[in-house]
Image (cartoon, rainbow, N blue to C red; front, top):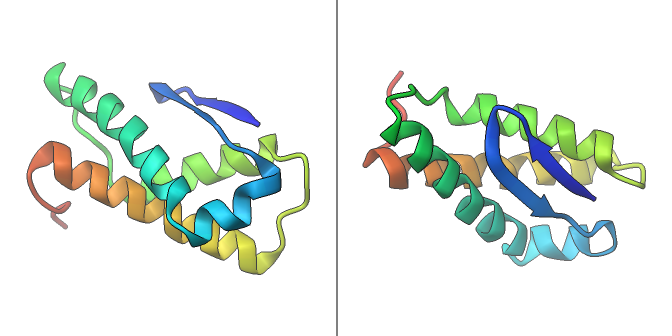
Length: 103
């Protein structure tokens, strides 16, 4: 599945359903997503846009991934997927802004 997240028009990742579990387990998904997010977040930050919380992006990205998936994602995998995406969003946010999201 290839997805483009409209709020981050710079994000375009190729997610392979057949290796999704492995990519989550070994951190490949998180690292690929983080690289894409950093590019998008840097562009938004440079243009003066305020970045919403990482949890907002994680939720939206996972929704798009679920809709684009060719297979049913069970509850355990869905939880693991969200955690990996959230971690990627948090790491990218911190890299771009220089620190964690403030409450």
